[in-house]
Image (cartoon, rainbow, N blue to C red; front, side, top):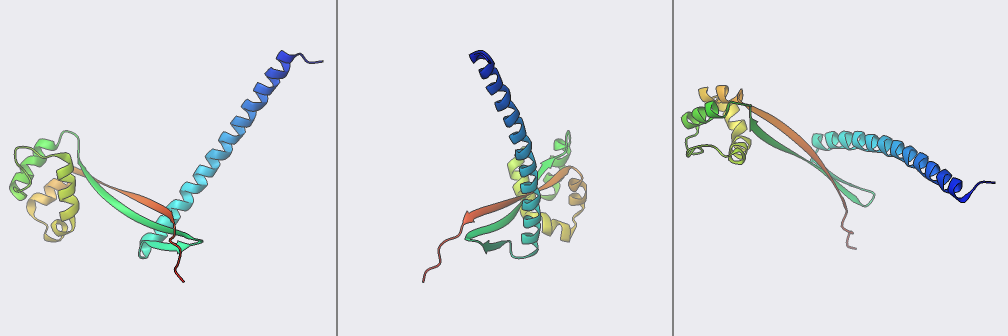
Length: 141
């Protein structure tokens, strides 16, 4: 016959085993969810970026940001003074730089000014895709 202490030890071991099993299941579920969200985001990006299904509204958006390559800020500021003097006061704020490049990237790529070809090597461009899922508004009859 097991003592009270042994029963409690068994309960602790069983609960830990169950927790470990659930962690494994959660990890697999998170991976499946990430894969499905990535595929849905890519599919939404091919269309108009949104859809409604099963009472939910799904939308996808892409945000672009830029940051300066390590140890290249001074060189980049010099190039920006040449090509975009309205952006540079004494130095360039990282958020201002990212906003300027995000807003003007297509125009700069199209015009191909000399300074932009050099500056483009001094910044890193990154995109992040966000999937939004909301309960869809009820349709009025």
